[in-house]
Image (cartoon, rainbow, N blue to C red):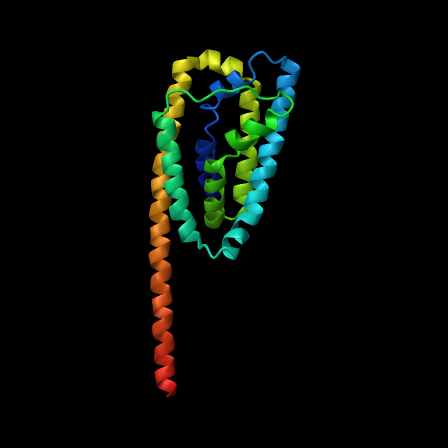
Length: 212
């Protein structure tokens, strides 16, 4: 159960459900409520499909490219850190009009929910805790976002613009801390794999010398 929460919390922070409420409200402003509900379902289904497919094939793609998990952890951690810093110091996100029929898929489903932060975090967590825990955490988090979107207007009224921004900044700060931890673990794994390779080389040489 502890492994589940260790997966769930970083993914929750990566998707930043409270922080995306203002963006969701801005994108769906003026759209009839029945269409907004359809957009929410579309965003949930799209983001779940993209995230799970990426989780399933991401490791295989890395192996084909010759990328070790330590390489991905270091690069992914740095990427997450810059994402979090961008959110911390950004004033307002750019807004533009989108087609209501595809709004749930793009940009809500991808990249607002299933964006680089979620995809990078999920594949790193899968290496730590396995596919099942990570996949379940992703699905539950995205369903939670769907619920938050459903009641977004009421939540925004309770929190207010200032409250939503403060929570979003706190989430970004936590994501930055998680990014640093991921880089630290990546460096540790890199050193550990290098030491293990060195020991294997020494053992091989000793065995070869003895036989000679």
